[in-house]
Image (cartoon, rainbow, N blue to C red):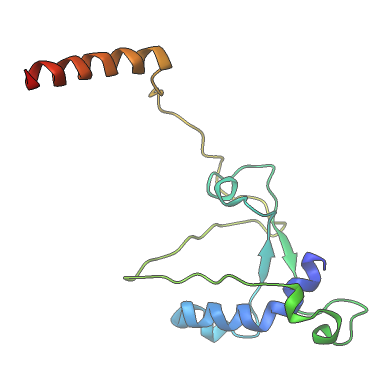
Length: 136
């Protein structure tokens, strides 16, 4: 099943889920929502506004498919909704009309680094010697 067909088949459920998740914001837009997709497991790339990641707009209807519920069976696709707790805002991203990031890419600016294996070994020796000294 193509992503386009899966999204068209799931459209009513996704639309209802989004309206229930954010009723004030999205319920009034029922029937006018836009759905966009990216490759699977690209959440971090989206969050970091990677310029090479482009969203692709999906559509409620697929050309040449008269009845999507007959073309794609429920058992062929899935949907994992998300719940927000304690007034959680959820994740949002702003994109251009062609699906590219509006904001610049987030890059690492910190000079912090992970300690090397040798540094970790040295640290463990110091800690272990302190534990031994305190238990004597």
